[in-house]
Image 1: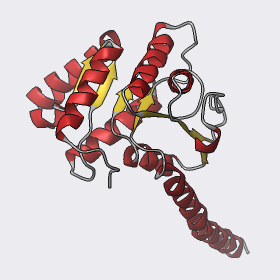
Image 2: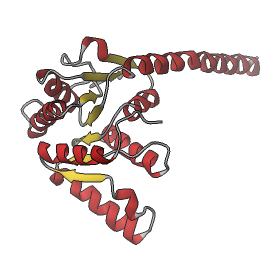
Image 3: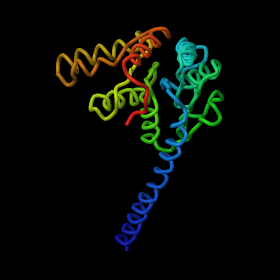
Image 4: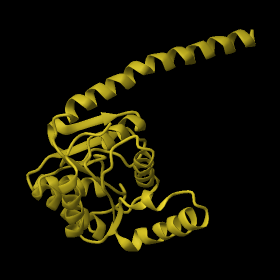
Length: 229
């Protein structure tokens, strides 16, 4: 009897997995349809826990404003903290403000600065990350936690393995990022040869909004603006 119950439970799981494919497809279709119309954008990542009075919140807002003033839109994860600051800066500057929200049991709720027709909701992290990579002309990575690091290293991996076209990856806040980059260079690169020096060429560590704009503009003087994949 127990084996029969286990078999029924396993068959139910397999059935649910099969039906999940349609939900995943729906998220991709909705994302592609909406984001294919947004024009050139830069993604801003960072902690959902950063408060509005923090220096990095204020810097993210300034960065987003200048990105818009130089002809790009802004994409964020749609939530509070650095994401809110990015959308706020884009909104204040009158530019495209996109939010890719994810359903989480804590931290995540959409912020009020996303364009009403450019707020998307996702259940699946991997679908959401495809949207970030496909429709971004650059990643601006503010200080954050595991989620921020996940998005950063996935982008680097995809570029390293030629799965996507190159774009600038800009780490903002040298006091936050230098320790990590020192470890990457000394341990991954020099001591163990697990990465190559070329893998690090697109990664920049900066402290100001003007440096970000210079990197983006210099890169796209050479390369055209187009979706990835």
